[in-house]
Image (cartoon, rainbow over all chains, first blue to last red; front, side, top):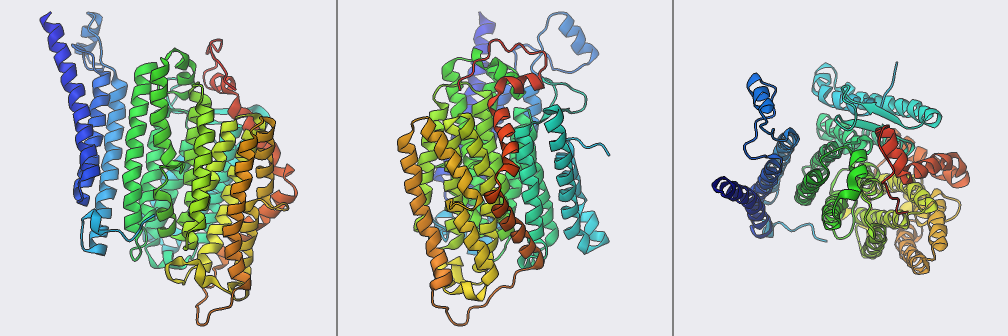
Length: 128
Length: 501
C-alpha cells in the first residue's frame, strides 16, 4: 500500500507542478506589462509542457531506454522500460523553445531601442 | 541524377547554411544561389509530378526506418500540387526580391538565409507524414517568419513581429499539447497510423485534441479570431515577405488544418465547424478590409477573407467543393501575390502606405497600375480571369448541397470585396493627380515576376483545363483517406476505418 500511495503522490506532484508551471507562465504573459517578463512567461509555459510530456512517458520503477548490459539484464528480469519517444520529442521541443526565446529577446532589444521603453502599454503604434 | 522528395528539404536547408561561406567568396552569389536552389526544386517538382501521375503516390522513407517507426515524406498528387505551387511562388518571389531596393540596403545575407529556411519549413509541413515532424517544420517556418517580419529596422517591424511571436508561441504550445495528448491515446506519431487507430479514442478526448489542433493551426491559417498578427505582419514586413506569407505560410497552415480534419480525425461536426468558422472569418475580414486606409492592411484583411472562403469550401467537403477549394488556394497564391507585388510599388513612397495618396497613379505608373487592376478584377472573381472559376465551382458545390444561405453570404460579401477593390482602382484611374509625389521605378526582376503572374492569371482564366486535371486528382487524393493509409502502411487493416464524407 505504501508504495502505491508514494507513486500516486509522485504523479500528483509531477502533473500538478507541470500544470502549475503552465498557469504561472500564462499569468506572466497575460498580466505582466514588461516585455522581458512576458518572454520569461513564455519560457515557463514551455517548461511546463515539457515536464508534462516527460511525465507521460514515465513508468514508475522503470529503467532507462538505453541498450546497456545493465539495462538489458533488468529488462530480462521483467523491469519495464520508460517510453523513449517523449524524451526525444522534448529534447527537440527544448531546442525549438530556445530558438523562439532567442528571437523574442532580440525583438525586445529592437523594440527597446525603437521606443525607448520595454513596457507593452507604452508601445502601441500598431493597433487593429 | 535521381530526384526524390527529400531534396525539397535537404537542398534549401544546406544552401541556407552555406550562405555565410558564399558571402566570403562573392557578394553576388548570395543573390544568385537562392534562385538556383529554388529553380532546382522546380525541376524536382516537374520530374516528381510526372512520376506521380504515372505510378501514384511516392513515399520516401528516411534513413531506412519504415513507417510507422521512421519519419516518411508523402508526395501524393495533393501534397505534390501544393509543394509545386509553393516552389513556383518562391521562385517568383526570388525574382521579385532580386535587387529589391530596400533589401539591398539591408544585409542581403540574412534575408536570403531566412527566406530559404522559410521555404524549407513550408514545404516540409506539406510533405511530412509524421505529426511531430510537422510541428518541427511549422516552428522552422514560424521562427523565420518572425525574423523576416522584423527585417526593416526603421519600421514598426519589431512590434508586429513580437505580436506575431507571442501568438505564434501560443500556437506552438497548443500544438505540442495536442500532439502529446494524441500520443498518449494512440501511441504513435505517424499520421497514417494515428488515422487508423483513431476510432478507439474516446470521443471527449478526440474533441479536446481536435480543439487544441484547431487553435494551434488556426493561428497559422489566419482563422478568426486568431488572426490578429496578420495585418501587422503583412504591412510591416518587406514586400517580398508579404507575398511569402500569402503564398507559403498561410497555405501551409491551411494544409495543416485540412490534413488534421480530413485524414487524422473522424469527428462528426468538424466539417460544419469549418464552414461556420470560415464564414465568420470571411465576413469579419472583408468588412475590416473595407474600413482600412492603408493599402497593405487592406490586402492583408482581404487575404484573411480568402482563407475563410477556402475553409468554407473545404467544410462543404464534397469532391467539387474540395476541387474548388484547392483551385482557390492556387488562385489566391498567384493573384494575391500579384496584388502585393504591384501594390507595394504603388505605395512605395506614400506616407503610411495610405490609399488616399494614390490619386491619378494610373497615368504615372501605367504598368504597375494595370497589374494591380488585373489582380483586383481577378480576385473578386470577374469572368475572364482565374478567380472566376474557383468561385464558380465553390458556389456550384454549395448549391448541390442545398446551402442556399451560404451562397447568399458569399455573394453578399463579394459585393463588399468589389467595393473596396474598386475604390482603389477608382482612385488610380479617375483621381486627380497630386503634385510632387515620387514614383518608384520597379526593378526588371519585379516586372518579369509580375508579368509571369499576370499571364498565368489570364491563361488559367481562359483555359482552366490546363490546371484542372492536376487539381482534380489532388482533390480525389485528399478525400481518399483509406488510400493514404494504404500508401504509407501497405499491410494495414482498413476494415475498421469509417468514412464520414
